[in-house]
Length: 264
Image 1 (cartoon, rainbow, N blue to C red):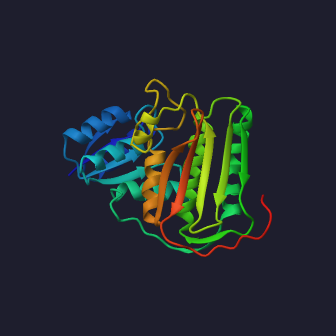
Image 2 (cartoon, helix red, strand yellow; image 1 turned 60 degrees about the vertical axis):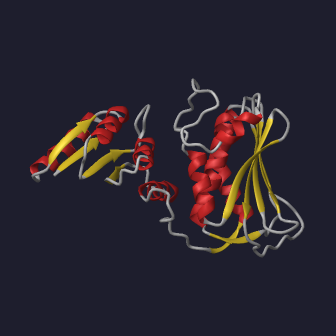
Image 3 (cartoon, rainbow, N blue to C red; image 1 turned 180 degrees about the vertical axis):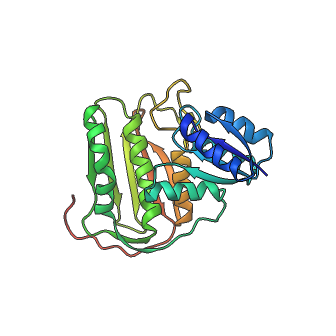
């Protein structure tokens, strides 16, 4: 039985590989995601031990590409990232994003959720002179999976803060006046082209191929749309003029809301 270990830390790569070999397993080891992807694509492994946080091709991207190619090799994610959204993301990728994602619905108040999602991004937004605002009706609630909904909103806000030009604005809003709720994350953009919109949720797509933001692999919006479908929503992109993009998360079915006066 042959195992592939993909880990950029030489010490950890050697430790894991040595332990596996001592237990009678054949091991191939790679120090980066690009080489690891090549090995995984061209060889048959019983399992892959995969680090998430690697430069260039990281563990998320490697796993995503394997699943796109139909390879269902068992994967053990080796990472210090143990938050619930990270675990959900890994589960979605490991299951191939094909209807295997568990959904647990509960009543959820939307305004506090979006505030909590935005709070970690306020400091990086301020550093780039971005106006990050939340304007949701107090008391608006819905029946949804809280983990998946949080992961969707985190991806939308993260993407907006990362790619809004300096001095721009990021706004979180909701429309609940008629029919199902629509949550919106809108941001300033540079030179928005209608031809870009069909590609907005494609895996690994970037408007500027030469541009790279730390920690972004081109998977966030694709995963957000996958999670949206899982909880009965549609995630779409709508341009508002040439310099503003609105990402809309709308429920397919009617869900009860309360909307007392006031916003936050």
